[in-house]
Length: 327
Image 1 (tube, helix red, strand yellow):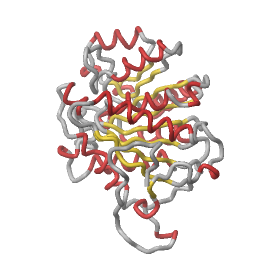
Image 2 (image 1 turned 60 degrees about the vertical axis):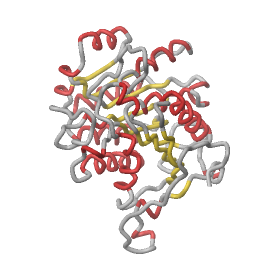
Image 3 (image 1 turned 180 degrees about the vertical axis):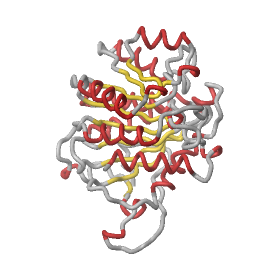
């Protein structure tokens, strides 16, 4: 039962998966994940209100069921179904984690009320972060990112002066300057919010597709000091060095994965499938590198569109990346 201090629109639902036995050696995700109960495990958290510097720090999953931002950005809607699809793909996986994982349910964006949904999700994330958890958001279109930012920016870690880095694995900058927020605007919104708070905007992107970002977007990125790697330059060595340099310049990290960073053959179920993309082994290596850094504060996965997926392929990839990040 979720306490009144954590307001969600849909309470956590039972997880399902293959059953091989009740013993720890048979355990799968669906057997390991429990409903989130604020405060229930706070005594077991090694270091409150700090980044996840241990595989034992409890993780909490929150769904952000929204495709309003994609609709506003003239994309293919359907991402609101993604949190359920990713949970379904996670459920049957063997559970090898040392940390506990709980599920806080979903924030649901309905009737076009994107901004209100982002604020609700942000409040929920801040509460969980300040209780010392590693937070994991399952989107949703990439408007999920601004909800995540609100949660991270409101946390004790960031308000206390830790240098926040935002690492985006994405084919797009999502720096559009539009009158109405959408899945294409979240990082420009973050830049404005960070400036208003008197903080530097530390934003890096791995996987930018040059043909899918206008010169105006590149100019905006350059003007904001955004670091980026083009998809064609994403060899394993270059990406590892790029991420290491970025991690060295920050204290805590918010990692966001837009699944359209992957090749369409690997991730067909997205609003904008990639013609080129970054190979899955490279993306997975980034996840391991980030997890091992001790700086990961929050992560989200966005842009899964189950309506366009093929045999659950994209959902399975999303689940595998979440599993890697929490190992």
